Length: 387
Image (tube, rainbow, N blue to C red; front, side, top):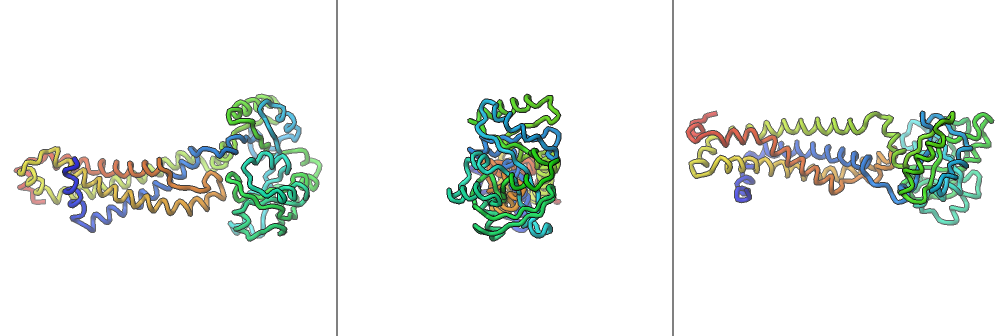
């Protein structure tokens, strides 16, 4: 096969305009596919961080809109393998102008000491840690959020309550760095509880749990859900990564959507590449006859044409892969605001190999039928061809 490679390379650029357009179409398609594959891989196959592998989230089985009794915390703490428990409440308030997407970020009310124990990977100076614990109106914000909103230690942050009838006036007590908590703000749960009516106190939206080891996580999840299975407020406990994916599921079956889009793009580029190769082969039917008179076999002719298609497809695949590597940086930076699994989105080695393999597949499949027909054409018919 490799002895035909120089001839295949020369044939691939004989019609430069057509080859350039084909390479461009494959590159754009592979760029899109690369980004989609990277998103799929980040959402469903990305390994959790060391800290994330130890954390679970307990919520109401019916819906996140349903709350759980605060008394569940003490019972969850008694489950073997549970190291720490902390109630979390999604505040969902407005910062400045709701119409500006830069002002959207996650806001949680937490119990400071328990919260800091659970966040094992949080990088926070000790003086800021103590300030957050001791100051009732203190809050912690992630470094990326502080940079985006131009906030620093000591600045005031006012949130307008949406879910809760309460407008907290907060002071930035610390700026942290945590791979599992981007674009996030945390403030004292007690501060919020004091302002709520009696009917809304002693409730929690979710409970964050820290396990002793990753191996304890499945057992703890089952034990907690079994404990509250027959209670008026049944629970659903899952790993932190699965909990984050539950928000993505609100948009629908993301797995199916991504697969359908990838399939549609692949099918379209197959048609484009197939049409290009068919035109290229038709123009060279007489040349096929000449090759056969020189002693080339049917298999040799088939190999030359398939190799030509493979060269064009792989060139387009490499260019598309390079484009995808650049674009995933911007896509990941924006998408991380809504799902932390997409932070640092990139083209991993398996995704790159998949893209190049798909490019090669497209080239070979799209050219096989024209190549097969050309290879089977006898010498006399080839030389007589006038199309």
